[in-house]
Length: 125
Image (cartoon, rainbow, N blue to C red; front, side):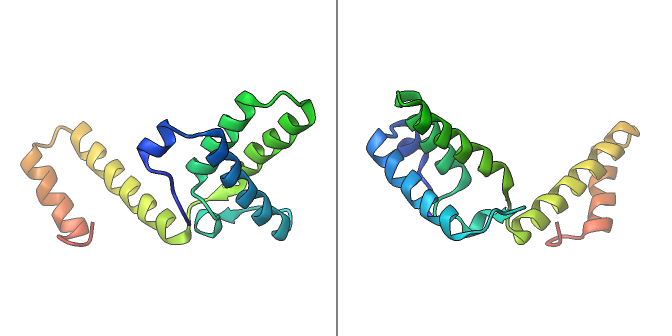
């Protein structure tokens, strides 16, 4: 999967946007109507595709083309993180929730660190 840099996103040209949209379109033609697509399977990152679609949508005059671009944006709702990324983000979410629970209970930073280390261990977080 390719991804635009922050600078490329900021300076995204209509030509580059159309290139990304064409690759996304070819991908969607091959895939059946999905319930979910893993982001790693896309030709470009979800963010890059969304930026390209929005760039093209802003300059498009033809209503039918605007509708097609809008459908492409809607289809991005079916894109989910890869299982590995999802598992990692869920783990970080659980760590954050645990830390907030301890903080709200009034524990000192030292006690929170001690408890977190006991639960998750160094290198396991």
